[in-house]
Length: 325
Image (cartoon, rainbow, N blue to C red; front, top):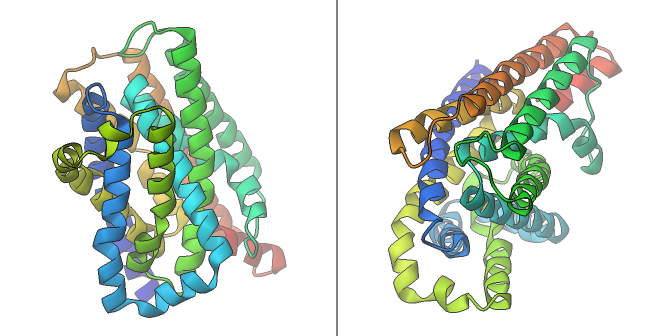
């Protein structure tokens, strides 16, 4: 019963994250037309440490000690947090948010078998025939999304080839890295590190990298100026820090299968919020890609769950269960 309660709470938190993330992506997509993405990124990730480090010192000193004692993994968590989030924010500035979220989060399920092999102690699940067919459908949905961007059929209309290529590279590359980050974070959660302690030490690398990129491009005053920080801090706290915290708790409670199934609804929700915002024209091609992805992503998550339940209690079955937990 306790496991079931954890899974239910994780599902609810993941659903809350999807709603918050949809608002975040639509709002930031518009904000980034006027404010440098690095300004929001540096402010948000600095706030993560400033908010959660005192809480972790008060409530989870053991978790902080465990992270400090595993410095190599903590470094990788910082690297795999910084790179995809900075890429994601920049992609929101140059592409349609619904397609950015779809590719960013959608590429993860296709790469999990490869990612599991990179993390010590993770058993790579062997996909069933049905899962392999569904992964082909997932890949097709992502290719449709890429085709919508390349063909100028998104809400942004035709865009320069270099801008489209940059958006695709940022979203696809960032999605692969954030999937690895999710596995690493879940591993330390399973090792007894709570979400508060993890968030306290997860993003210093993102702050350092963001400031370094700003300095390299001569934009440090526009990113670190007190007036800029004060202006973007409320949005950063509510739309970046809070969703990350909610998602971190959801990941620590729910199985990756549940999280993936819930995330599948995100792009459709982003598209609907874009209609409310009215910054971008409605694109039926974007909606079709988002719905196609949602159908295949949810079905693929269900197929994995069925495969785990059907697996016999043998070494192979136990490995499949461990990989899908």
